[in-house]
Amino acid sequence: MAKRIWFSGATDITGNALAQALNITGVREKPTTTDSDITICWGVKTDRDVTLRGKVLNHPNTIRKNRNKLEALKMMSADHALTSAIAPFVAAHEITTAINSRRMSYPVVGRKTHHQGGKGFWLCLNDSHVQSAIADGAEYFQKFINIATEYRLHVFDGEVIYAVKKVENASEESWAAYRRDKIKDYAQKNNVQVDNNTVNYALKVLFKETQLPNRLIRSNHLGWKFTSVAVNTLPAALKAAAIKAVQVIGLDFAAVDCAIGTDNAPYIIECNSGPGLEGTTLTKYTEALSRKLAEFERPAARASAAQVEVAPNHTAHRVAAAGANGNAAVGAEQTRLMMNAVRTPEEASRLLDFLMGRG
Image (cartoon, rainbow, N blue to C red; front, top):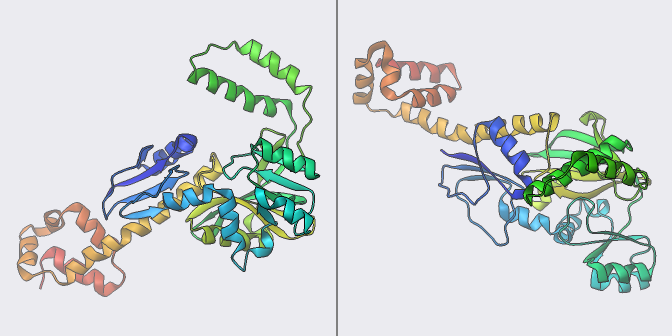
């Protein structure tokens, strides 16, 4: 049984970290699979349907659908339990009619169907802003959410396993560190030499012209950071909406960006199938994935145990001939699977009789 995690170029840092933590293979290209394999897909990017055999967590076909944020909003808003948790939205070609008919009202936010972080974001206060946003690439518009508190809930297998909320982080060092890493990354990829002193000086000058935190886009490079919150302190409606959103889209796990509005209502913003993880979040996903991998492996163990009950006598005699080391004759791995599948004292007794060649 092969186990691997498949990730994309944009999610390879976390993908590799998870592969190492789980002691499984990490790959960036579509793997060849068999019916007994297990594949974890971490933010995989594909442009067409793919087929994977075996057990799959977060199938790439589902990830591709979720990456189209307009289609994801349509799926979620169509579910009765989520309708009120999705702010009204329309495709770009419908926005003028929606405004004129008062189905939508300003302010609205223009977005691209495929976006990441705060990119592709246009706050529009009037018709002129909308037309400019469309000219610049906006593909759909959504009613602006008046956010009281924004959260990211990590949902795995129908349960919130970890939660964080966004808080202000207007420090110069945090702002500069993000950009410093970006510059170094771009320079390395393009074989460009950069002088650290020059970069630091330029960032210090630019920071003086920056207003933080950004009240419209709450991202980690615009004056915000995540801080952990106890899952049991979260509003029940917000947890329920986040879990339902992941289920409706068809994902097995996701980091759900969501919020409590100033109207005290829960709102779902989007689901991320390959979030960046470090520290506690990496540990939480490693634990959750480890449990899931073990669950996937249990049916094989039960099948091996079932074979014990119907094992022919000549097999039992062959094991008996091995004496106290009869389990080695069966095979260490098969023995381990059999023992893991034992559920009752009676099954334990039958297994012991088989391994020792008794009766």
